[in-house]
Structure formats: structure tokens, C-alpha cells
Image (cartoon, rainbow, N blue to C red; front, side, top):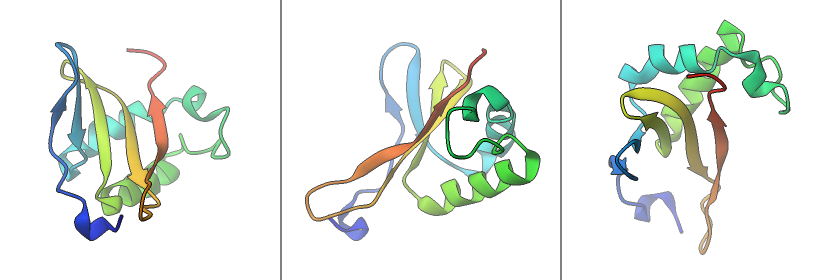
Length: 102
């Protein structure tokens, strides 16, 4: 499946508390705060992603991806996930994280 055949992302309400929103520039500050916790990254290959310069680079790539969602519990940002590696009959889901504290 090519990216050109994928519909534009829209907000998804999963239940009374959880929703997914397509990433936007306005999410910058809340995501910078959310991913500043080193615990999120300690079991990944990006152990220093909590550092400010790495967080900003992560955000720009997520924004450029166009298929990134911000995960909310009510109005609190609790994580992010994205779609990538679009193939004819598959798509990968990853680059997912959840905050360790709310």
C-alpha cells in the first residue's frame, strides 16, 4: 500500500478516556515534556532520546512522518505511536512510547 492511498489521519476516540490525535506543531511542548523521562528510553536503542536536542529531532521526524499519533488520556498526553514502512499489503506500527508517570 503506498502512502498516497492512505486517507488523511483523523482523531480517534478509543473509549471515554483514550484518544489518538494526528501529531501537530501545537503538540510540541506537551510531547517534549512527555519524552523527557529517561525511563521511557532505557530499554531502547535510543537511550539518550530524553535529552533536549534528541527530543526535538524526534519531534521533527514524527511531524514529517505524517502518520504519527499522539495518545491522550482525557486531555493529558500519555504517549505516541506511528505508522511507517508502507508496503503493498502491510504497514508497520512502532516508535511507540508511553509516559511512566501521569
